[in-house]
Length: 285
Image (cartoon, rainbow, N blue to C red; front, side, top):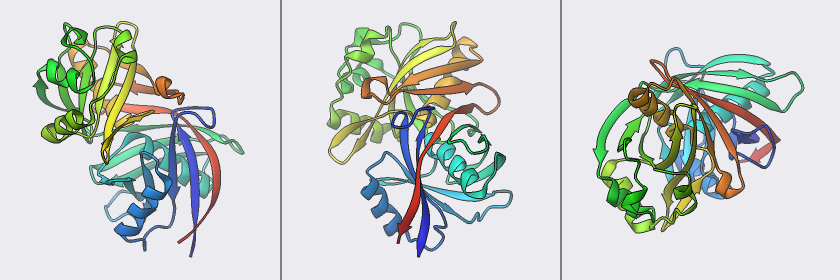
């Protein structure tokens, strides 16, 4: 049967920038193999499928697929899906609770009547601080030298729903020199049980950071334009180590897909930004 299909760009107010997302509605009867196959068809970092909630207190279930498999949680797919749901329901303002493999996350949407640019934010899961890692092998996997490590902020595994490797660097120029070694990066992510390595040049006194995010797809290291599930851990990390109450993260600049992720610290980190609806159609599956 035809299903509503929305295409959105997340963490941007401009179409054809930010982090792209495809959202399939009314997906209760799609099996996992079909959802994975369609995620491979879009070849986006993530594609989501809206299903009826199975948990008390949730408004809908959000299934999130990379081309390589399902994720329990992700940032830009959570915000983009909430905006797609609001647009489909005709809600100008909405407070939803989404169900993911990581739990229940409150999501807020402000969608001006008749507009295609929304503002969305979500409360991620409580921060969990994992192991600190030796900086040299991590930086080496990303094509950088030990001297690029930040002198005061260590490399650490942090999760606000899904674990990521937070890699602070000494200066912004290091972000220009990144050249990931796919095999070494894959080994790092597998060993630490993480999804991405998140390099960031942080200026906590100004509450800003610039970041790049890398993950493995097949034999290749791929870059993600805007990673809400890593910006949240970065915000929690900076709050714990520097006291910064918020951070605005620029990401995707090196890809020509600029993103701005707005993060606020608290008992649960809030991550938000603009979301632009690009197209709406039908999926004939």
